[in-house]
Image (cartoon, rainbow over all chains, first blue to last red; front, side, top):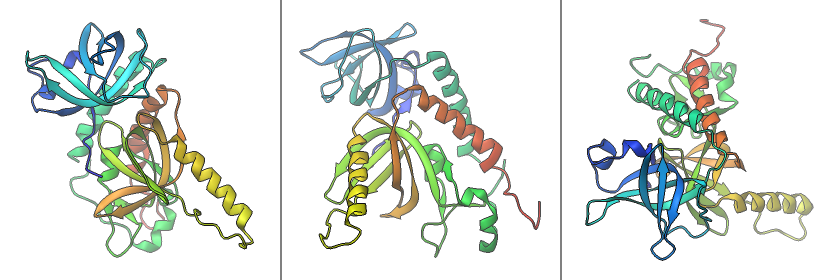
Length: 121
Length: 176
């Protein structure tokens, strides 16, 4: 089994051209968002979170039922299309309806701080 | 915060440390940072305290099922931890007096294995072991989590336990 990189958990509004998460090619990420639209032919889904959006390529996901308006979490690699658009190539996805987003955001902030303190300790 | 790795206590005092007997809840990056102790397989050290068993929660990002075991990887966003679940009773002897018991254990393991699916949020408990120079969890039990909030709660508990328990000095009789 090859070593998999962990999908760093990010918010969609942290993903922009100059963000550190988009600096390295094929950065492994975990994103969360509401499914806005889904193209059955190309497998490209558009998810939104707090005003920001991201395209997710779901071709590799077979047993994830995608429903518009539901919350999903995807783990995959961030790539750029020819037109320099960000697309997450998802390898794993799951439905997270019922997740408390405020709590999630707060816990994530605490966790990042915890990680920073402990890695250098 | 400690500047360098503290010295482990003598082995005879390990039994006084509850951390040695419990399933220690760690975030993945913290779990992979524990130190295998030389000449003591299955014993690990974290900040001067001994540990053997861990509990972790994460999303299954890879699975590899073989006849006698299933290997999978759990990703909690900080690191990926390899896990292995053994199926020890695949070849049953018909004459074995414990056949019924083994069959039950077998079925139990099979039902656990069925829960290991890509994208599933899993909580696992098990022993820490080293395989191919890499730390892994040899799973003894696992539960699929349906509530997505369970993951958030687990993060908070890991952080609380680290700062209120695991990072502190163990209770001791010799120097309290």
